[in-house]
Structures are given as C-alpha cells and as structure tokens.
Length: 185
Image (cartoon, rainbow, N blue to C red; front, top):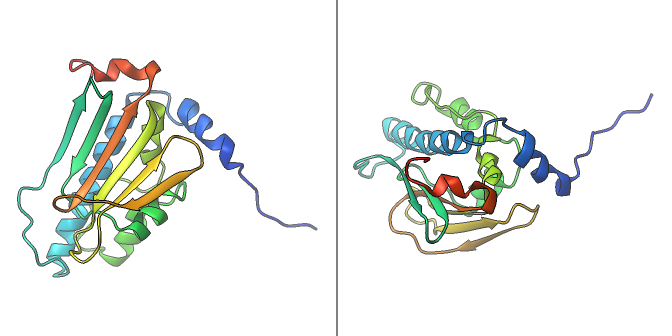
C-alpha cells in the first residue's frame, strides 16, 4: 500500500476561486464584512478577558468606495493583525483564525462568524488586486501591508496606519465595475 498527500498546484487555485468558490459574486462583501465583524468581536473578547486594557471606543465596520480609483474598502477598528498573523491567516488557504481563537477564548468569543478560512479569498472574485493594511491592538507591533494581484505571489511590508484595525482595499476588475455604483453596492 502507498500513502501520500494530495497536492494542490497554487497557480491554478485563484482562477478556481474566482469562478467557482461562490455562485453569487456579490458574496464577497458579506464575507469581508463578516471578517471585519469577527475582528471587532475578538477585540471585545480580549477586553473581557483582561488582555486588552485600552479604550474600545466606537467599534464599527465601514464600507467605502471610490469610483475614480476603482476601489472598495472594508475597514474595521477591531483586533488588527501583525505580519506573522497576516502570513498565517492570509497566506494559507483555508486556515481560519476563528477556530484557534475560539479554542482559547471559548466563553468570551462564541459569536465569531468565519470558521473555514476561505471567505477572504472571495475578494478576488471582483478584484485584480487586494491590499490589506493592518495595525494590531498591541501597540508595540508595527502596522503592515499585504498586497496580492491574484497570483500565488504576495508582498508584506511595514507601513504606517493610524489606530488599530484593518483596511481591506479591493481594486475592482473591469468585469466587476458595476460594484462601484452606489445603488449596486
């Protein structure tokens, strides 16, 4: 008997996600807002557990769009991410931060939505480039920017960001420009 692991060719995965992950292309917004909501829930859980001692402030998720730049931005002021967390949760397909967080903070974080690690990639259904700018709730951790054009290659670099949280910036592709219309979004 022979045993092994099934391989996945990464070059082929993004076209599959872009076309077949969800039948409804509008799902990208729900998935990204769900992720932003989870980031806020995680911050609340850390605060309840005494691990975040800062001011929570007015916690919110915002969706903005810029037809001239052809971008849609989903922003939250939740837990944020470090470079290591971005590497762990964005660069590994189908790896969810929710399950790991739920294991540690069962009592405080039972309402997390995302649990499969695929929702973020729905962004590529409507985008030819995605940028994630994030600042962790931990003050000593520098802000980071992750950029990917839908290929298996990405870049992570330190950047500047005011306040904790995450901005997911979608550069909308030509086929999806309808999402840049206010009534459509």
